[in-house]
Structures are given as C-alpha cells and as structure tokens.
Image (tube, rainbow, N blue to C red; front, side, top):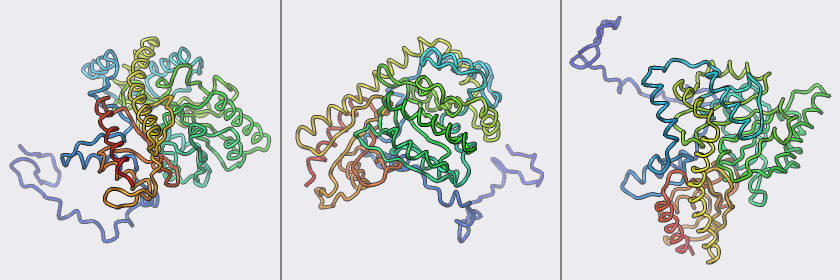
Length: 452
C-alpha cells in the first residue's frame, strides 16, 4: 500500500523505497546558533527533571515511591463518573470541532454560577476566558500585561513564576517567605515591593504549590488592599496600573472555612485582579486540559485574542461536559469534599510521621498542610555524612541520597524559585496509595538514621 499523491513522484509506504533520514539529521556544528535567545537561555522544569530520575530508576527494576509530580494516580483517584461519561458521549457523538476561542458560552455561564454559589462572588458576563488548563492563561496574562524589562513580583517558593519571567523577558522580584508565615508573603512585603512603579504584576497562589498551605484571610485582605492603594496612587500620577494574578487552582481542596476569594474581601480590587482556575486538581482532570482566567472586562478581548492566536483551547467535549456538571453545584462540592478527604488522609500520614521522627530526635520538621495535595518538609541534614562517607552539602545531595538509599523521590524548594540549601522539600501525595506512602516514609526514616 503506497501513497501516490506526492507531487515529487516519490512513493513512500509499505512495500516502497524507504527514505532513512538519520544520516541527514546531523546537528549543526554550533546548534545553539539556531535558537532564539529565549530558547537558548531556557531552563527545563526541575520538577520534571526530578521525576525523570525517579522514572529511570524505576525502569531499571528498582521500586521507587515517587512523590514528585503534582498529579493523581488513576489507580487511586478517579474523576466524577457522571462527568467522564458525559465527555465520552460528546466524543462519540462527534462534537470534536473547534470551540470558540474564549470558550463555550454554556461553560462560561456555568463557571460564573458555580463561583456565585460556592465562593459568594458574582462575576459579570464577558469575564471568563476558557483555556486548555491553567498554564495557558497564566502565560497569556504575562504576555498581555508585561513588557520585557517590566517587573513581576511573587513570593518564593512558588510555582513557575521564575520560568514565566524568563520566557517573557520580565525582571523577577522574588519575595522570600518562611515557615513562620506558612510560606505566604505579608502585606508589608507586598507594599514594599509594588511601591516600585516598574512592578507590573504581582502573582499569588493559594492553596499553595509547593507548600500545601492556605493564606490567612486577614493577610489576603491586607495584600489586596495594598493592590488597591497602589493603583489609586498610580492613577493620580498617570502611571501604568499594577495587576494582581490570583492562582487558586486548588481551592476546593482547602480546609473548612477556606479559601476566601480576594474580591470577596476587597471588591474594590476587581479592576486589577485576574483569577486563574482549572478542573485539573479538583476534578482529578489533569489530562482533560481545561481551565480558565476570570479577568476584568477591559482585559477580556486582549486575552481572548491572544488565546485565539496560541490555540491552547480546552477540548469542546470536555467544555460541554464540565458546563453540565458545574451547573449541579452541590454535587460538585460533594465530590470535591470526598476528594479532599482522600488527600487529607495521605497528608496526615506524612505529618504524623515527621512529628514522630522529630520527637525521636531526627532533624526534620514539616508545616501542617491546609490545602492542595502537598506537604512542606525539611531535612536539616546539611553537613551530615552518608554511610559511604559522602557529605550532604546541598539540597541536590539530599534529594539524590533519599532517592538512592530510601528509593523515595522528592522535589527541593529550589525548583520553586527558593534560593539556598535549606533542606526544604515538597512532598506530593496524589500519585501514591496509603500503603505505598507508608512504606516509602519508613525507608526515609531508616535512611535518616544511617546519617552521621
């Protein structure tokens, strides 16, 4: 069977002459000259790099407890059956054509209705831009608001802000945080940072990736008020506004009474606040690729048009199915409540283990998680020696020791923009069973006991 439609007359296919391209695909002598300066300077994800090391070890036949990726194991977690069946039905019915570049109208309305019911915040029409997950709208916000050389402020540790700054040519202004504030910034920190009129965007994520913590409502109110006050000052001086990107993709996985939306606390911030969400983490839908940005009306068209050029749209069958599901708000909240309990059981196991180890005298601590699917843990073992005599002189050394000795894969906080070898790591509990997690933690304890 050959392909006879080729204008060159070359027939390629089974039974015909095959063109082998390997010999033609030699890299240029200096391949870096082929790249743009952005690509040449780009660093790959440190999270994915840690996950890759774990995968290589596992493929060699070694049992590894992988606590790196913020995802769910299908064997342990499943999305709502009604939603999945509706997606399958939409696909079978052939509704696989392009959706509108800003999203299916029914989904836009469903999102607005769900937020009004669950968060007590009612957004007007023409504010919801639907995208293929949470990453595309975050990137689009950077691209639509930030010029090369503009400053973007964000707390550290935090997810991917440093990478997006590099990709867009923005100047990063990280705001260091600590366990004493649950790794959240303070209003005073934000005020000091954004008083520089070069700061164009302030980014905040709660519940936090990587920390698993939720910002206190009083702190969130204070930060949001700072955004309003700074914009009043800039308007008087004729300066460009400061925008606030609030990433809340884990919000249904927060504890009771949380989270609180910043616009429920300070509605005056609405003209400057962009809200990012996705079904990835609270409907166990990381592979469904559906998210959205809720933006002030004056930013709706630019963001919609940018997404139209990029084409990172959520699949129509998923959009239609999620629209139907979100319209049943109480059913959604019941599902997310059950999911939250599954996650909490694993987070509680990590917390109990680290508490017990600290009582035994092991040099560890953790921050009690209040949201997301993560736990912040610290191994205060810099300077200690392994059984083979190697000195643990960095977070990388700690990570590799635990991977090879305990067969447990973790991600250091340096993957989230935090500097210094502090011993802080993220544990992600979504991709393991309770039994796997318990066994992995037991091996970590034994590995720690071996250190001198």
